[in-house]
Length: 281
Image 1 (cartoon, rainbow, N blue to C red):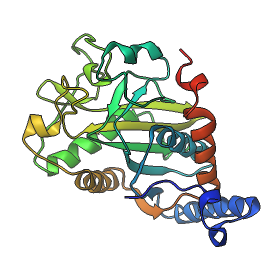
Image 2 (cartoon, rainbow, N blue to C red; image 1 turned 60 degrees about the horizontal axis):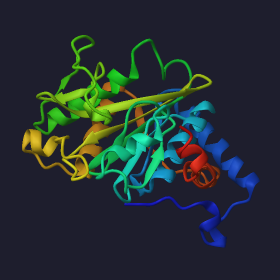
Image 3 (cartoon, rainbow, N blue to C red; image 1 turned 45 degrees about the horizontal axis):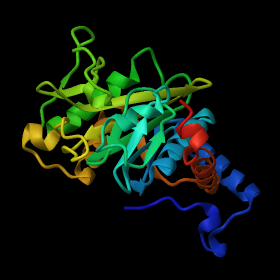
Image 4 (cartoon, one colour; image 1 turned 180 degrees about the vertical axis):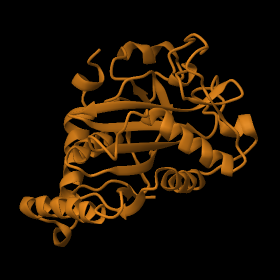
């Protein structure tokens, strides 16, 4: 599993000038656009593990790249158990539970409630404005249908939360809140997502809860609910296959550009690791 490495932290022989980085990103966009003349292509990034600030910075950078026409899908993990707050949540919420107060935390660029990223697979999908990337269909429900099909292939049956009849909120945690399209096993939520939009581009990230975390014992995962102990790599591969089959798009293995890596490092340090962002409410 790989971690992020900014361009400035790589050996000198691997570095590129700013102009070269811009040209590389332009060539990546042109390569995907050219291939898209006959096929709809989405960049597939390699699985990475990082801390909270870098993971949220990476998702924001994917949104920025989507604004330039690059569609991307990535799956990732967390270097240690991390609490993330929804954009509009009060920071004080994390202090209500003594199991959570000592965890590193980060504020997400998306809305929603509190998450503890521990025994899970996280995904991020970033799409340019307009068709064919975005239609009137909800990508929240569409992506969850894709994930449900991937889980079903592994013998794990889920059901989507109906638009009406969701139980009332009963806690501060995201997986205690039920929205239309969330995936459930029995009456427990195992998949949820949130979005952010910017000038028409869409970034959607979400969590697939593989197992119960000791930090959130009230939330059973797929292991406890189905009896299946699935690995992150297995779920990631299954969702990729399901995504390609459902959309008809070609997932093109790709890499972060040097400009993107530098931008991730900048946002991680200047924004997502800073109190003015994380304690803003």
